Amino acid sequence: MGESRLESLLQLRSCEVQLTLSGNSLSWTFQKGRFCWGRRGPTVSIPVNEIVKVHQGDTKQQSKPTDAPSNLFTVYHISRKSDQQWILEASTFTAHSCQEAHDWVMVLQDRIQNCGAERPRKLLIFINPYGGCGKAGRIYINKISPLFQLAGIESDVIETTRANHARDHIMETDLGKYDGVVCVGGDGMFSELLHGVVRRTQSDNKVCENKEGVTLTPCKLRIGIIPAGSTDCVCFATVGINDPVTSALHIIIGDTQPMDVCASYHYGELMRYSVSLIGYGFFGDVLRESETLRCLGPIRYDLSGFKMVLSNRFYRGTVEFLEADDSRSSPRDNTRCRTGCQVCSESSERWKEEGDAESHCCDSDCDTWKKISGSFVAINVTGMSSACPKSQDGLSPTAHLADGTADLILVRECNMFQFVRHLKRHTNKNDQFALPYVEVHRIRAVRFTPEKLDEEEATRRRKGFFSSLCGAQPETSNWNCDGEILDCAQLSVRVHHQLIQLFARGIEGTSCCR
Ligand SMILES: Nc1ncnc2c1ncn2[C@@H]1O[C@H](COP(=O)(O)OP(=O)(O)OP(=O)(O)O)[C@@H](O)[C@H]1O
Image (cartoon, rainbow, N blue to C red; front, side):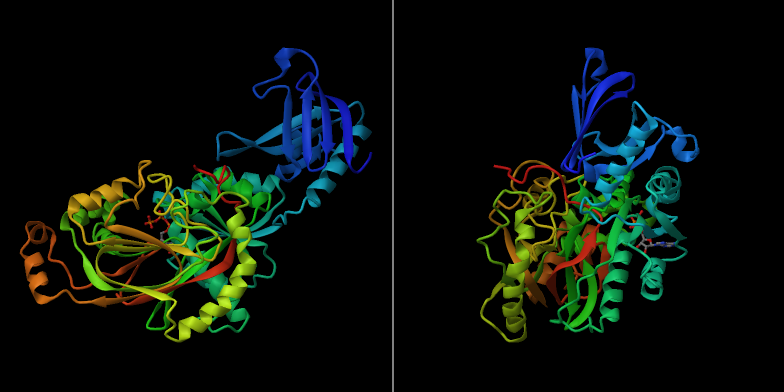
């Protein structure tokens, strides 16, 4: 059998097919009997890196291996159920002899091993038993564990017993034997893994992460997310769908997606790491309010959002930011960050050059920092689109996952109806930035200094109808950092280019939206 191209006439479900392995693609063409074509037409083609496993025998022999030689062999491969949803399919071929079946298995296994992707062999898996109203455990046992077993992935599974259990375990355990860490839960669990992996990497490399301006060491250990929470935004924005099986298949075939991480500092001291929303004003207030309604479940966010819209609060302060080079991409360029994104892949070299300039500017009061003072209903910083099922394009549709930038969205003082108009545009095709009181900047760092409302304004707002109904406006808001409250108003945020790697490949599809 040759290295480059291999062909055989075989049987697949009683139809004759021409099976061809050429380069990085395995395809089969139905030879006769138009009723044999099945749903997908006469030729089916799959990339070798989307083959999960090949073995001699049929699907029953996968779980009960037999010594009897078989002229059957089964290819387990990924198939697209819809645009982003993946399923596992098994195709059992009948060869003319046991030797022919054996040869196909050998050559396919060899190609899979050498297809370039580094597949995990051992994983450390954390399950939040309370995630997604208690469904995380069932999802893992019924849907995910059988897939990992089929793929021959060994796993150490830990059911968490308290908040931060996963983060603390990652800080202490021997990680050398794992090819990745995986959470079965929501965004809160992902955040634990993010903090565990980033902190552990810095401590192993003797990097003092608490100091603002320090260059962090990129993390090699990949993070996987099996979405099983009530909010799974990170998974949605990096895979395009919240489907546990799709995410498990990305993990199995070793997909890798680098990702930027924002670090937030309060007067120079590290507060948190985050990958999606860091919001002051509206989103900070919604989160704080929602904590008082925890017993209501996910609907608490809608209720507190409604209350905060009615309150129509705004906050004074000064925003300073270091703008990114807009010749590569901009928040209004109407493109999308998709699998194999060129902007992200070309960003590494640029980052090295600009990174040096930036650390220089961060320390001194360099005039490349832009400054905007005023009253804001919301100040949002998002490291990625922050797309979710409710807002398919997200807070900033053109934001990139791994280009070393974040988008800063400023909603200036406006009335309640104007703000609702802006919010509504996140759920339809209208441009949420094409409003006179909204502006967006692609940035590499930002800092916010709060100011108090003047006495006259504060008194006027205290007397407002909705203020008396929804509670008086506080002088300052707090930050919502990926769903965690940061109890401070002054904050600076720096984007760390491609600090972590996920088991994902970004959203599949075209990057051009014009
Ligand atoms: N065993 C546990 N007991 C209590 N809290 C836990 C446990 N394990 C994890 N947690 C915490 O629960 C929080 C929420 O978990 P997760 O994101 O998985 O679920 P979720 O359903 O999306 O939750 P929510 O919508 O309430 O944030 C996380 O911040 C995590 O730190």
